[in-house]
Length: 259
Image (tube, rainbow, N blue to C red; front, side, top):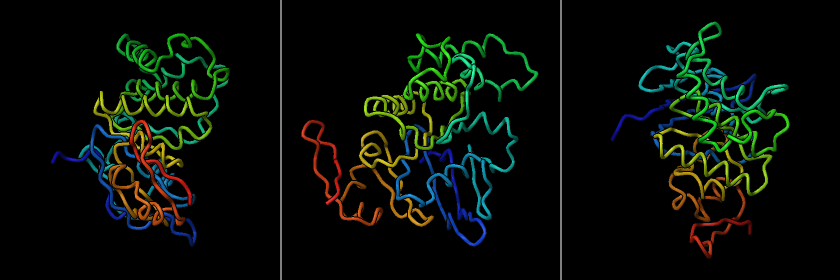
């Protein structure tokens, strides 16, 4: 087996008297979309922030690309890992091309020259996310699905090997949910990217992720392929409610529902 791109061992994190993550062990391979599922408050977003180095665990170790994550400088780490929070920052007055160009910052810094290679990466990311008609449009004036694609394009321009996305479909309609998740799956498989995405909809996770990882009370309680995870007893253990599963009449993929 190849060396995992990311490895966590006995990660602990808490605030005041509350433990949010407790003894998390996790390894993630390249070229797969890993969906984090679980009830509210289970630790999904916190785990993503630990991987992204947005917060520091109280104990445990995190290895990225074979190196202790604590040894990476900020810019060097950003060349490996790109993070999109659930609530993205304001982009007032910024065009799509300008937003995507921010992804090149880890490669040349504040005072570094933005060269042809940077420009080429930006234009390639715009094309790959089908944003060419919107390249000069203000991000703030775009639809939710288009904005999400613009942020994903920025992550592509960053040229990181790992993309972390916290609920990227939470404010999108069904068509845009499918569009964004299809794009992530395609990018992962085409470029060998490690993608970790927090999803509330277990059926979306089953359809678009290669692996589903369930958290509950700050611990990983189950993980496996969608076929393995989309079982009534497994889903009940994750969400604490009775759930049924049937095969989709067209795709034959498993679909869950509340009993």
